[in-house]
Length: 229
Image 1 (cartoon, rainbow, N blue to C red):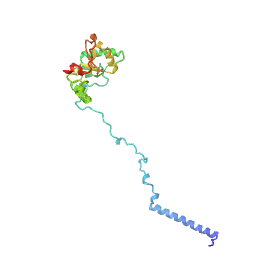
Image 2: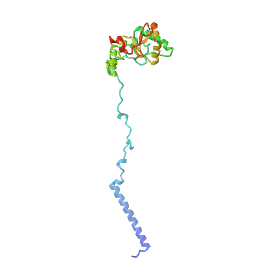
Image 3: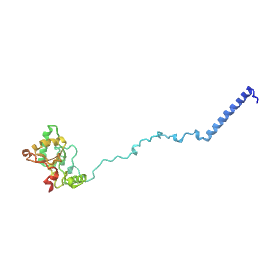
Image 4: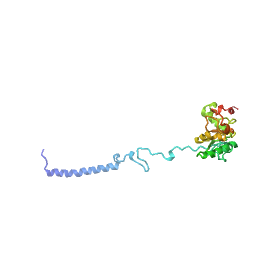
């Protein structure tokens, strides 16, 4: 087969090139008109205004988080300061607090005299508990039974409302540890004595302690004859 002369081939190429370009243009127009999916953005990559396209979930808003517990509030009729509940920071000088004001007058006087001298050593007597109402004592005993598992074990720490010296105003629980240590060493001079070995914070008045010293301590309240009445 004979090859056409160069001029003939050149003419043929010039004729085919516009035809190919024209076909491509027509095909592209048809594809665009039909909305071919190849030319559409993927739905997975589409974002709406305000939407996070990150693969991580956004942190929940405050409204999505569970509400925090509201502060506990005692119901009407619950125990309060009038029953001997002691606010934080009360000292033996706070007359307006019933737990202090309702203590036996001689006990309170001895505590204040001791507190004045302890202050020279930089020590303050904080009252953790003093006078208590019978209702408060019963509640403390109920909680002690629940905590220790039996009335017998609870009795080592909490007396009944009829036997507790707190209810009669004859006992006070002192803190902090520096204060109880000071009273353990110097308290007898004021008639202030620890009564139970298991309660270093518990003090009562023994008026003859200045001359005779404090009496021997009971292991715990169950050994105290007053608790068996």
